[in-house]
Length: 142
Image (cartoon, rainbow, N blue to C red; front, side, top):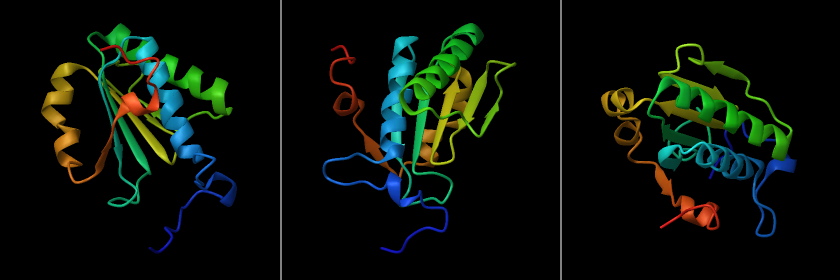
């Protein structure tokens, strides 16, 4: 496998004992989304099919207030755990579809109608789905 031009620095590489920084960011973001009752959280590993990012996280919020709250919780958890802020945030004032761009991880938080219309899961359907219960077994309720 060839390395992508924007690959993370060597300190972020994945080893058997140390998960990659991208993976750690996914864990933190999912935890933040779950803390604000984000629904239908999907994690896609897109690094094999896209140069945009290593992972996409897609979350549903049921009101503009909840979408914003999820976005704020994700950002706070990532800052707390990894001391990273998003490179760019779009849509926060509208609260319909918030995109948080961390470079290696893109977090999409959408209202149900937008999620259904844009259907990002289908568009990126060829990407590997990550089981979030494997990420945070203590936070996922059955």
